[in-house]
Image (cartoon, rainbow over all chains, first blue to last red; front, side):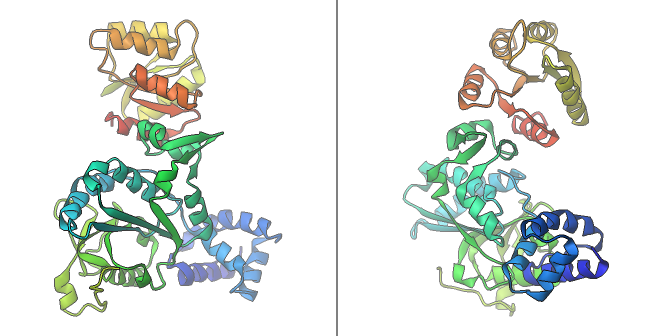
Length: 286
Length: 121
């Protein structure tokens, strides 16, 4: 791939998905795009880039962007966010929403579904506490292919062994030849949609919890701030934002504030909103 | 430093497991079958046991049942590591007192995740 082609691809990825691919990751682009070129009957990466340049709106350009995004995920990844969800976030929300009896959760970069399904399993194990509540889990991802995989809920032996305790495998999965499929009742708890975080996500409504882990880390600062500020408009005042272990809002925006002694956990900062944050808080719950 | 007894009749698997577990700061002991493993546990109980299912002399399932009857035998965390990957085998292993279950083939990430799951790391 020529430096010119690589620069074109980096710009395409940034414009379409917000992801920043550093200059030294040409090898990554090449290894991920060669299979795309082959699938589309193109002899080389140069031909692939040529096609995308000629027809930027064609499905091939979507396939190129999707192939370059990272879908690394696993069940109960990092553990602590799920312990916080079970032991801190949910008890607080169950008390705060005892009248409406409705809780909305958004997994903003759900990839192949392990995160929203981990939440669904956690909620199922809390059935006594959540009885009578309507709990929605909306799971979104940029890639349509990935969303379809997530909806199917079928995982390889490797995937189910990364983070999923064996008791939960037995409890919630069925063996289908060499793979494992998550139970229909868990799948039914999650609504999957394709969504680009660069686009307007206000139609999704207001959420009580937003999981947005390990995705904004690959965005440039300006894009990251923009997403946080728009997200702040869609988290209830007493709701929560959950970020990845290596991510923070500190130094980027004051529309969220850290929850003391809960790493990776943030709450909206109404004072910042009143002080004239560029985002408008959606007061009405969806 | 915690000790892990690696029980497998394949020297290749024992070597791979040793490399992974030494990387996770475990001291490794090895046994080729259930009988050798039981003798090792009668001498000194390890903190962890990575256990194959199918082995000559005494298989992993039988070893686990015998281990749990030893004084202090409920102490070691036992992680099965086997090609037996059907639901019936997993359920049987858990019923016999296994703490976790790895389906071969495995890699470092899986071993690390499972050892974390049972509190060994």
